[in-house]
Length: 391
Ligand SMILES: Cc1cc2nc3c(=O)[nH]c(=O)nc-3n(C[C@H](O)[C@H](O)[C@H](O)COP(=O)(O)OP(=O)(O)OC[C@H]3O[C@@H](n4cnc5c(N)ncnc54)[C@H](O)[C@@H]3O)c2cc1C
Image 1: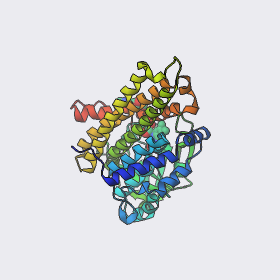
Image 2: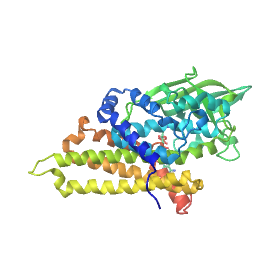
Image 3: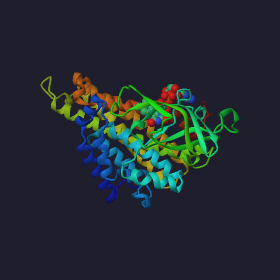
Image 4: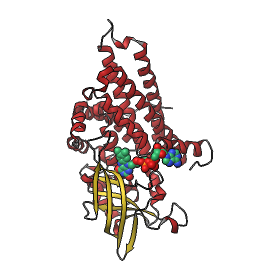
């Protein structure tokens, strides 16, 4: 077993920490307060080549596995950026990953070179008001009409659509009632934005207020058949390939935020003095931080193991087992770390000025999205422990 990073990975972590520090907590507090998109951060991400990681070299990519992207993600968040990269870097990479894995030559050439530079962004439209966690139940329908498809339906929470050059849209090309198997008949489309048939309204939310999440309405959206990604009806299988990387990267971001919260709380606890000694000298302050820290570090080992299995070509179920455990553990540990950091700060923990309340709000999202904690446990219950499918 070798946990040591190689020289390139060490350099990547150092660069990521430094970019995270350049966009530190005050930057994100201001963005959050003003609902202001962190454009400068994304420019820096592009300049430093973060979006090129793992994309094919012929399209401007840099050879890298999920391990490297996970290391970068954790260090960006830990370096000072908190939750900003944990969601922002994720939605920058997932669309590119789908195009890389399933797009045709024309789609790759049209998107990947600029995506590798961070100059094109791609939103993701899967979740629907009436389908929720049950992806197979989506109602958005793409009807073939000559050389086109005409798409109608609705999506919700599509994040960053207002700033994206395209959306990867998940739609049914065979209605559920007509499909042989429930997982048949789902297709992915790569649709240029803006599109007059696609309108949206922002959803006001609890955290990550610098990113806009939207209710999306698809009204007779006519797109050429060349917008289809991969095989008509094969979209569900194509989506499965993104699930493990997504869980690994969310977990990495959560670990980075949790570690940042612990570091911030320890500094505060060592500095703040109310009963003639630093509050960090009280076990009731120390132990919650030490316990959360232990869980974070242990979860991080599991995240790295999931990434290592993924990059080493282990079977999807094997990678899925560890990725789901990693995502579950990392998010719970991060929330515990942020909660302990808020408590350590006393009343100041509740004040925006001290950042820890924002990181707690941000980590809470990862219990819900991109996949809920319950769904990770469903996977473990069924595929690891061998119990009946519970839904
Ligand atoms: C800030 C934010 C950004 C997002 N960005 C995007 C995006 O860019 N693109 C996109 O497509 N989506 C996005 N989402 C949507 C997100 O992926 C969904 O909210 C999430 O998958 C959960 O679906 P739901 O909200 O419909 O919950 P529901 O499916 O209604 O579930 C509600 C609760 O019931 C539980 N539950 C449901 N079924 C089961 C079951 N079988 N077993 C156990 N528990 C169950 C769930 O775990 C959850 O706790 C975003 C969401 C948020 C909040």
